[in-house]
Length: 182
Image 1 (cartoon, rainbow, N blue to C red):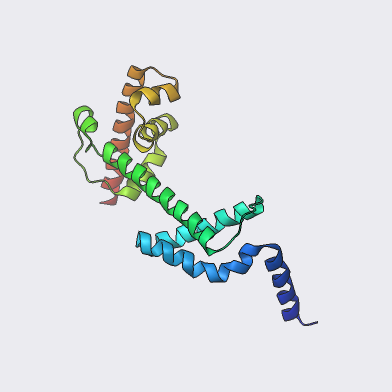
Image 2: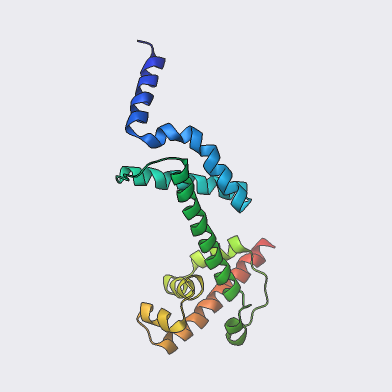
């Protein structure tokens, strides 16, 4: 039997066992088009399309029992897009707060700098874990200082001091990196 027939037979068996594989070619342009139309960015739409199919495959492997079709995949894509917007909003709040443009930041730690988002996120990853965690809880997760203190097991005053040190460390590192790039 020629190799092409073996490949076709394996593909037929796989598609019969996994309905998502049989739907993939038809659903891919639909899911991608849905995401591209709503986010307007090719790279983001491609990433979210991949995330959608990975999540769908995980659901199928976990025993999803409902009907699997394009509407179901569009629903998964919609959830992925919403997650993307939420993540992006949290990151923007963090950058806004760390950049000193929030009311609290202006009072406590004014810093009039336009931050580069990708560089700011890279700098955040270089900070010590305690500084990074405090900044992320406060500005990405948008928790009030009292809740950040509770999560970290600190007093409110100790947490406020930690946030001041964390913002200062972020600023020093960011300015040093921006200076190196210039």
